[in-house]
Amino acid sequence: MITLQSLDLSKISPESLGELLIEAKKAYYTSAKTIMDDHTYDTLEEILRQKNPYHRIFQKVGTPAFDTGWQKIKHSHPMSSQNKVATFTDLIHYFELKKVPPNTKFVTQPKCDGLSLELIYKNGQITNAITRGDGRVGDSILQNATRMQNFQKKLPTKFTGSIRCEIVVTFKDFQKLNQLSEEKYSNTRNAASGLSQRLDSKYSEFCSLYAVDIIPEPATEFAKLKLLQELKIKPVDTHLCQNLHQVEELYQKFLKSRSDYPFDIDGLVVKIDDLKVAQKLGSQNNRPKFQIAYKFPAATNQTRLLSVEWQTGPLGTVTPVAKIEPVEISGAIITYISLANFNLIKQLNLNTGDVIEVARRGDVIPHVEKIISKVTPGHLSPPKTCVSCHTPLITDHKFLKCPNKFGCPAQTLGILRLFCQTLDIKGISDKTIEKLSSRVKLPGDFYNLTIADFLNLNGLGEKSGGNIVREIQAKRKLTLTEAFDAAIIPNFSAKRIQQVINAGFNTPQKLLHLSIDNLLTIPGFKSTLAAKIVDGIQTRRPIINSILDQI
Image (cartoon, rainbow, N blue to C red; front, side):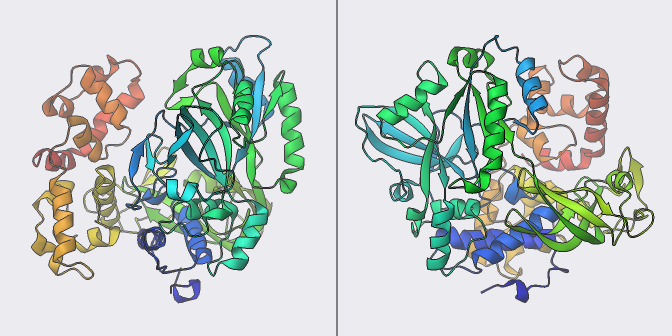
C-alpha cells in the first residue's frame, strides 16, 4: 500500500505522479484491489493539480484518463458545461450582453458540488444512467444508480425522456461513510465521484440524486419543477426570481447559510425562465447562453512561500511553481501553486519567506491572491538557463521561453506525450515514452516501433507491447485536421485547422505553406493570430512532416 510517507515528494516529477494516480484510479474503479487509500490519492492529486493543472488527468471533466470498464453511451443531448461569474456586476453584465427582454424572470438553483448524471426513461421505466463524461459520451452506471438515494426505477406516468441529476454525498452520509469504510475520503465531491463509478458498486447507497433538468421541456424552467414533482423525482431547491436583484438576495442568503446546507454547494445556477427566450439565445462553444453559474467567493487561507521550482513545458514555456507551507483550504491540503509566469512574481513582488494569501478559485485551482506580510525584500529572480537543457532563456512577451525546440528533453518528451494524448493512444504511459527516448525523437517515430522495442522496457511484456503497437498503427488513418492537431502547433486548435481546411486550404502542402495573407481572408483570423500560426507551422515543420510521412 502506497502512503505519503513512502514517497519522496520532493523528487517525484509531475509526469511520474500523474502516472501513479492513473494507476491508482484504475485499480480503484476496475478491481477489488487498491494501491493507496483515498486520503493519499486526494492529497497526491491536489499536489499534481498545484504543480501542473493542465495534466491530462484533469483535461476533461468527468473523463478518466483510462478505460473505466463501464460501457460508453452517447447522451441524448450534450451535457454542456456552464459559463461562470463571480460578482453581481458581472452577472448583470452577462445578461445585458445577451439583450434579454425586459421583465425577464430567472430560475435559481444551488450549484451542487458533485457528479452530473443523465437518467433515461422510456414509458416510465428506467433504461439507463449515464455519467457526464466528455459531455457527448459517458459511462453507463445504471447498476450503481439503482442503489442511490432518491432513485426512481419506475415513474407514475409513461414519461419518455431524460432527467439530468447531480450525484452528491451529504455531509451526514459522508461522516457515516468514513466511519464505515477503511478508505477515508477527504471531501464529499471526491466521495461522490469515486463511489458512483466503482465497478463493484460498493457504498453506492451513500450517494444521493437531485434532479436539475428534464428533457423534453415544458414552457418554462419553473414548470420543470412541477413536472419533476409529478414524476416523484427529487429536485434540487428551485426558486423563481422576478429579476436579478432577487437573484442577488437569494445568493447572499445561500452564501450565509452555505455551511448549514445538507451537501456541498459552490454557488447558484441562474437560468432564464422563459424557454422560448432561452432557445433563441442558444449555445456558444458548447456552453448555453441562457444560464450561468454564479460562483461563491473562493475559500482562502494564509501560508508562507518556501521556494519556487521552474518547469519547462512542451512548447518551451518555463513556468514557476511555488512550494508553500502546507495549508488546508476547502478540505484540500495545498503544498504547491502554479504561478503562471514570471510577471506574476514581479506584480506581487513575491519572494521566499513572504506570508501570502492563497485561494482555491472555483474551489479547485489554487492561486496566490496577495502578500499579507513582506518578509524578504524584492522579488525572486528568474533562471537564466533552461532547467532541462541549460540553454539560455529568452523573453516572449510575459513568458520565459527555452528556444531549444528540438534539443530540449523536456520539450521533446512533452510533445511526444501530447501527441499520444491528442490521438488517444491507450496503454502508453509517460514513463514508457521516457524509456523510448532513444528510439522516438519525433511523433512520427512512434509508427516505426515494433514489439521488440518494448520487450526490454521494465514493466512491459510482449502482450503489453503488442497492444501498444496495435494502438499506434490504428492511428495511421488520420484526417488532415487530426494530423495537424496532433503536431501541437501553438494557437492552431483542431477547430481553427478545420476552419482553414474549409476555406480551401485542404491539402498538406497548402497548410504547410500558409501565409499571413491567406489566413486574413478567413473570418475570425486577425493579424497577430495569423502571424503566430504561420510561425508555429514553420517551426513545427519537422514534427508535422514526421506525422504526414506515416499516414
